[in-house]
Image: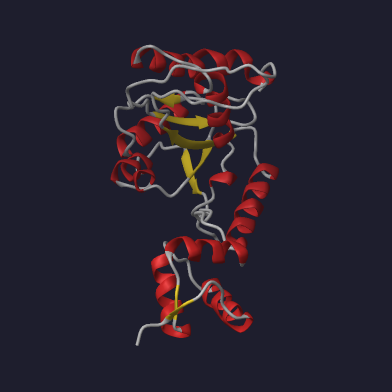
Length: 257
């Protein structure tokens, strides 16, 4: 027997529908209409269902993506470790934060102050190439050694550690803090650390905690200076602008950041 066609549901049915929807994330009205037909013997059209959902306070949108949570105690333990490290740091020691960044060759429109009523525009790019930067940052001196690998991997990680050591000939011990990427603890890095004269001591950040790495702020500054609202006719010009920022802008202007 076919169900009856109606323009509304009862108060109790509305409450039941709301409870059912609260425990789900329905991608279309098909599932919702099927539920109503089975549970209430009611037949709704697609448009009618949309109107009903709107009246009940539901809207069609995607969920917000949340970063994977890391236990608070692991973050607190790292902060305590880092604080203790700085408090006990001797003159022949140094601390660097390190990571890799991959700015893409594409126009990045960003908010800015413009005259009311104007319609600013910036040309887009056709390519999607990128520049690979493996870099470290000393928060005390703002020394920022980096390498420009074709691919960020264990080889580039070892090259970066080599560069850090070379720039700190007077340091007995150099603490390098970076994330848990596989190339940061692979065979190339292990071989580097196994050298008898190695002066690098690695410290790993807690998983999924980029906010604990200050070098992320450097990436944000780089985008502000180089990529936001800027168009580069060629990928080579884009790459040169990125490298110029790291080679010249940081050493000459780090106090203004």
